[in-house]
Every structure is written in structure tokens, then in C-alpha cells.
Image (cartoon, rainbow, N blue to C red; front, side):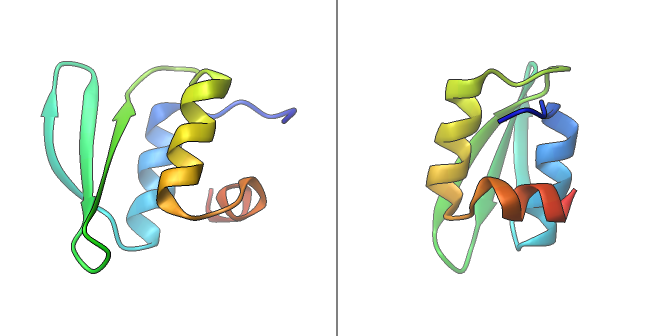
Length: 71
């Protein structure tokens, strides 16, 4: 992965595929997909770490290429 993503970019991409913002606690945004009943926590940082990004991608069921296209 050559490109880094911010928390706001990931939130924007997840909203495009059906996730809604449930609530926010501090700098962490809790998102939920009602159809799939999946919750994802996205830190609202300038740069998301590699492991955190991989976890978000795996849990949401999209690929890194899909994420790039959504942003």
C-alpha cells in the first residue's frame, strides 16, 4: 500500500457503501451497516496506521482497490 488514508476519507468511503455514523467518542467514529449488521470503528486521525486500515478493510468486506475508487 503506497497511499495513506485519513480517517475522514475512510468515513466518506464507508458512507458511500451503506454505513452510517452511529456515534462518536473522542476521536473515534462508530459506524454501522444496518443491512449486514456490522459495526466498524474508524479513528479520525490524519493518517490511519497500516494494521488499523487492514482491519477496517477486512471487516467491511472491500478491497484496497475498492477503497481507492470510493475516495
